[in-house]
Picture (spheres, rainbow, N blue to C red):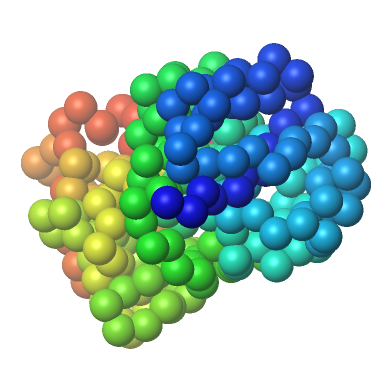
Length: 247
């Protein structure tokens, strides 16, 4: 069996050592560690001259963010696993983009599962990942990228009226169109900006700017500018009104 080569980009020595030891103990017959680095500069020099298959990546490094590295190399040819303590919006976007990631402190079982996944899959270039990296580079987060059955579609946040759970799928209702995503609605609760969107019901996420009226006659019901009506769950009423009234 031909071994896949891995490179580790991590600025904390104990995390690098943990990864190296785990790979050597659990995957020595399938993965060869080609090297490791604590910086973007050193990693860039290495990867531009040595061919590897898998990258283990921390996000926050001593000389910048790892996205600076990925934009200097042909990242499309690598299998990527992010291992990071950076657990804010970037991680949620990574999750939405279907890239493997783990949060520190690393759970060994989860790490083994992630490695087995990338070893078993014939991972193809992901256009959603390319868009995500572009947005992180320029700090632009004004739209969703939906990889539907027929196309990769960009939907501006401001054009989204609401999202509706449809089993394991999600309907995204936006200006003049409905788009079906194969991802569950919970993913979008993490990705969409909290000042503009709220999950007002287990089946609905609504855009504040799409709300025309709020009826209080029977609980809370929302009427949107397109005429649709959306319920607010009883347990969400107080949270919803605080969110809606924020300036």
